[in-house]
Amino acid sequence: MSFRTVFAAGLALASAILVPVALADVDIWTRTINNDSNGTWNIQPDKPKAKYFAVEPAGTVPGDHAFRVKATKGSNPWDVQANSPVAGAINQGDVIMLMYYARAAEPAEGGSKLTARIQLNAAPYTAVMDMTSDISTEWKSYCAHRVASGTIGQKQGNVSIHLATAKQVIELGPVFVFDFGPGYDEKALKGCDG
Image (cartoon, rainbow, N blue to C red; front, side, top):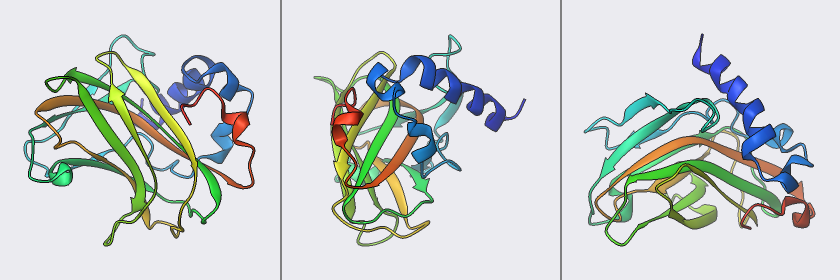
């Protein structure tokens, strides 16, 4: 069975079980703009290699697979980072939502806190939204919605999570980026941290 087949089955489970009830009333899955890559993370630097593994028990995260990344504190938070491409365009003023699955397998001293950004995938790496989350030792979805502060063209964006904030081992499951367009009622997205 291919990863895409397993991932598609995981999406059905996510919409039925893992997505907050209020979001289940909105067909958010038709609004994803990273469908080609939502199960993929590119880790930089690529040494040591991030471990791709099956998450047990099945059904814990959509797609049942994740990446394990060992990080140390760097001179810059982005010295170790995970990136996932965003193929769709985002216009300034669009209501966008970012949701990803993660857990701290070995949390930083005092707890792991990560910032995820939707940004340009090249210099100057300008972000149109960011969110900072305290990462649990249990699998959880982290979610926020914002009004996009800028524009990103098709295939010019990515989600970036900076991991070199501390010595820690982070496991990253799938990531989803949604674009609801301008003027969308954000109250319909209750259940997402906002």
